[in-house]
Length: 248
Image (cartoon, rainbow, N blue to C red):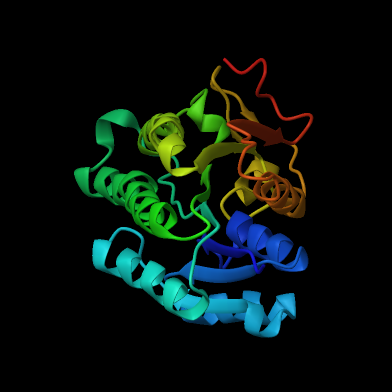
């Protein structure tokens, strides 16, 4: 039977890497993101043809999220996996000068967007036959320890962990497995600044090692590939030499 996945933020970075890895593994994948052109580039790069469906989506808007799941259900009849990945950052914002607009922008996408996608996934997965499915939330190393000047991002990623735990508990009765992947220093546009030097907890600026983002895609595909009676609740994947374990 065909395996159906949705990947949000699939046009670039971690989302693109995950979409490509899932398509390589034979999944049918709906690529969701705000820019249709970059979604189509990901689909074209995959060479997966009809197994890739591009659905322009703004995860911060409930109607847009509902339309995404409706489109996938209409096209393929079910959803087996959601990689809940779309996210943004507001780097370098000092706590006292952070604007409400910046705060709200990050919260709307990183937290409310995650919730909206999980909610629609629950609605579809509990009613389909065979019942159930898997949701993989993109947390972050920041779900465990903050970087300087990262209050909105860190707060939302801590909250994502709460969504993951609540979803894992509430999803049991519907055969829905919810897990989280926490990523540190994958080589993406968002993390490229690490190679130039970023602030550390002691005030120093240091260059940090990066890892190939394709390895993150492989990890997501690995989590997605387990049978539904098995769940990876939390996985951490990081550049081996990044200063995380001793951060602070």
